Length: 251
Image 1 (cartoon, rainbow, N blue to C red):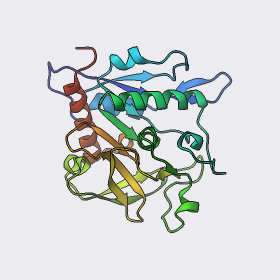
Image 2: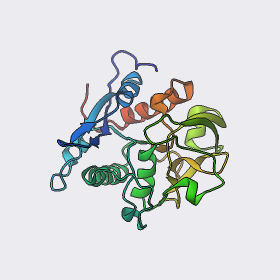
Image 3: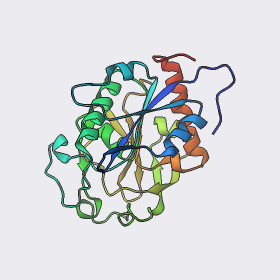
Image 4: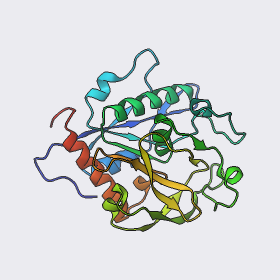
């Protein structure tokens, strides 16, 4: 990924951290997220799941952009559904913090990039819901997740909707992407549109339905684990949007 030109301000980009099981509980953040942001010219900042009575408004005010990272499953009661038996529940403290961060960042029109579970979080934050277990709810779908604790499912192709932000970023109508998910976006949240689907119809990317309004993009795959030009283009465009937003600290 290309670094920014010398002398340009490097935007601060927050990344939500996961909570690893304890005791004691500990923060967990894969370095690929940090490296992808840094390589594209940003400064990664890990965000812990703040306590419920200490909302991170000051932290958000210092940031120029936000990456919503992947992880376990969100409790479906937060989008009005009963839990499926396959649920891999997220730590409740992370879920509470993630929902706050996503809603506040989207509300303020901060540039937001959601990855895998973070892509699903964008939809939840805007009132949508999820397909909780693809094999049960979309039985005709291909395999999108490998065995628990094992390798991902084989890569598969997605088709990108013409004229969308994602289409403009990658300049391609089809991509081969990695696949780690057993859930997917279901009913779309407010102000969102689908910008890519797998060949079996599963939603693979969503974005703001208002062209040019903001950088709000969610992708179901993991571009930070993929060295392709398309992945670099996504992160480069996100970092450029964060630099232009210019709401945080200056360098």
